Length: 474
Image (tube, rainbow, N blue to C red):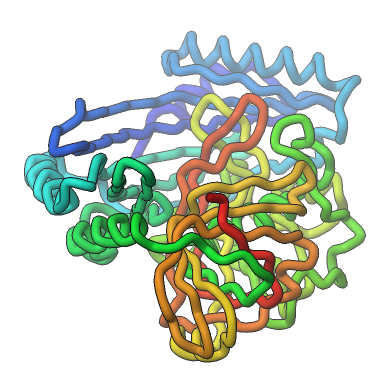
């Protein structure tokens, strides 16, 4: 993974107090079969450098995809000018920003082999044909997105960090319609993982087409979700978004400090809550785990060069630390985690979720169901809404199952539920064991201005919540 950029850049950099260069290169391929037709395949190559300069009391940035000596020097001079211009207006002192002088390497996976793509196309064509099993299946698709990324971060202090990832996002979709109602079942959009095509077998991707098609058809005939306050059992396909929206975003430190309020809202969480605020019941344990095998956002260092390690964010329901990188930690005078990340070469690193996980409990799925007298089980997010303080929310799922007297009784469609983050997690009354715990990941988390869409990892068990407002949106 050697790159000549560090040496090339060191020769062209004008004198400053400190500089870093983050070079990023990625190759992405998307293969999609829709309605038994192979869509035009997408192959995208991106490469560029992001330069940070600290000069006096200011910090400045420059970015370029021109990796020649002249291109790098132009971006460096631009960064220096911004540093000088920002010095009298800085929100915080530049000397408190990270200055990296260490070296490290992280390699998660090797690139996929291009000669296997023909076999993958054939497999996706066959998978799509299996989804179209009935005339009421009116839209269907099977797709795989592969991405290989390399980064090198080098600094004026001799620091050099090299990291490399391969990741994959599979997806299956079946849409059924009877002319009056339309229902959708899907798999995989929330199952992004690090690794190559071997992940398709681990996820059971090629064995699922018949199931999602059958469930889409059954939903057409299913009754609407009942409306009442009841127990709610969320399977991992919905737990991933519940965690993401009502824990992940509210505890981002730059959001708490006010940096995000004009784009994606603020947070009901305040700095004085850390260390004692009861976010959830004693069953709630949330970790930042950058070393979880195969998870979407596993890494050894964040994009500023801070070493990443596993930390509890919420332990036994008590909020302990935020999702905040070095700069936000310095501003807030509170410990965070190494989660300062950038979308690609043309964006500055900001506080982001990495691998944000709920630790498994002790209850197998059968015990979770047996413990519910009157409730509903839901899976796979379909819609979401949350207020600008990341507190009040409403979520819809693709399907639900009524639970009565400890038994699953039948399928229902259009299930929805709503609540308030500040109380919903305190009503957590059962957490699934390791057998219900699934490693998952989202590729569509948006944040920042200009917007950055980034990969985040979530590993979650099935969970039961009491006294939830459940309803149908039909």
